[in-house]
Amino acid sequence: MTLANQIVYFSEKEQTFDSIILYMDLDAFFASVEIREDPELAGIPIVVGGNPKTKRGVVSTCSYEARKFGIHSGMPINQALKLCPHLTMVRGSYKLYGEVSKRIMRILGRYSPTMRVAGNDEAYLDLTDVVSDYEEAKRLATELKDEVYANEELTCSIGIAPNRILSKIASDSDKPDGLVVVKPLEIAEFLAPLKITIIPGVGKKSSEVFSNENVTLCGDLAKLPHQLAYQKFGKYGLKTWKLVNGYNTENTEEKFVSHERKSISEERTFFDRYNSWEEIWIRIDSSIDAIVSRLTIKKMSFKTISLKIRFKNFETYTRAHSLTSFNTSAKHVRIVVKKLLEEFEHKKPEDIRLVGVKISNLRKIDDNQKTLTQFF
Ligand SMILES: [Mg+2]
Image (cartoon, rainbow, N blue to C red):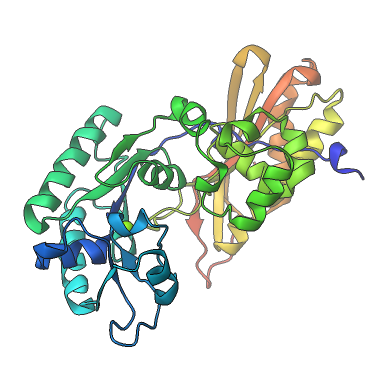
């Protein structure tokens, strides 16, 4: 099978966003703490890390003034000194950084109950249930920045976007002391002028592959047909293509805080047209397998099965059926979905744009208790 013939699936989850995520990153954290402690260091190129006497070691963090010389984290000290001979080296006060970090994370934790600390100077906050829209999220971020500065005299950069990866890109795009909001419909436009290397994971090697195909900016990749992105750059290229075109590429399974699942579902948007119900069924069938294997891993049983079907012009139907008792078998999902599909069989399969299957009414399987497989 050639790559071009492979079907590329887009799930509906990739097209819709239902989260508002804030990412905060302290600006040049270690260096900024040192400057706060010793104002004489302000405005000059400094690096934290390495041994000032032996001039060995690597740069841990550097001030923005040092960055202007091309110095960056991870660079050997002797190389940094070559770039900037009058560089000031500061031995890290790591205990102090840890204390400052803890206090700042405590402040952040008051803004949302759902938080993920990603490092001593960065964290994600899930604002989905905290704010009603992006305007409110922006106001909250301003308050947060002010509070961090009032308490610690440190600036941070914040990105607000519908998922984590975009919130980080948004924050990175305007440093220091930035606040960038990217709403779902603005993603592609926001990313277009940015270098492809701003995307986490696009390192030196992959950026070379991209530039061989004249892709330097996110917008260059976005313009390619998705099949071509897949052919040229593989699965990773397709994922990046989705991202730069404003699709939600984050694994929605991976929530910040694990919570009891209420349903398991799979939806498939068809970019290719299928002329027969058999072809549609193959896609549904694989969705059912995926759902039931997730159910098995989670050691759960279900009672309700739903089918969602969308035709062109966004005409969408949802049908559901509940069994009389809890069940675990794929066979029963298939039987119910087939039955629910009957209603639509007079319609043209080529008009179908999306099919989704969901099982809900889930219950954890008690090891001592056998699930009944009684049907209807
Ligand atoms: Mg930082």
